[in-house]
Length: 301
Ligand code: GLU
Picture 1: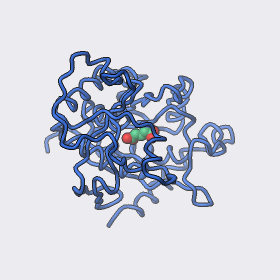
Picture 2: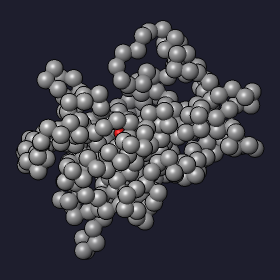
Picture 3: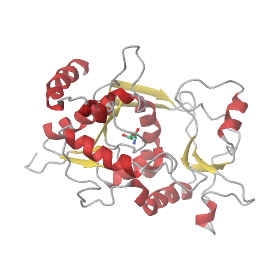
């Protein structure tokens, strides 16, 4: 290739708590890959969850990532050609993407609450993954494109004034495959491994799946580096890329860090927050070499 470098990666933390060592390792890998490719790294503040995101966590995440030694070329703190880099300020773009899905007939309104879904399934739900939606509100046939007279209102209310979530209708039985740069070949079956998923929420906020696809595409991301807990979400996101007629990026899902009991690290592991480690005198410059060796070992042959 010519001297033009096209690699664009991103760091996409949600400011719902302090970053911990597990985030640090995943973000370090994202930063390292962008450097290896002499590419551009984008910091995107995924602050859509109004109840859980807090401005002090946004300040803290920028500070902690810098303390870790990472740098990025575009972001909420430094601007760039794809601003704004705070997802909460990208509503108009998210609406436009939702409207594209709605006008192509691949989403339908759903009045089920989470409790309704669990009751319809008749079983308590264990684990972090969304249960497969039992199809209560799914139209018999593929929904026709919906002609909307009052688009803003009808994004979160149906004609009877009930609150609705909009779900993407998945092609039941279809295999979704992709080659993950870190986790190797992946295969999921729509309707079995995951069901119709929410793309627009009843509080008029885009769901994670829609927002992340909309923004990775708009920001020209060529490789998504993130935790392996999102592998199944990638299958959902690939369906969105397809429905929108967009080329998906490459994916690189980093194995998650666990504690000594094998439990995945979470923001609640306060002792391993980067703040606590900094206060305890940790030197992140020493972690890079260790993580590089670990990464080389975990990659597929
Ligand atoms: N913001 C998401 C999180 O913190 C990650 C999104 C992504 O990397 O796709 O869990």
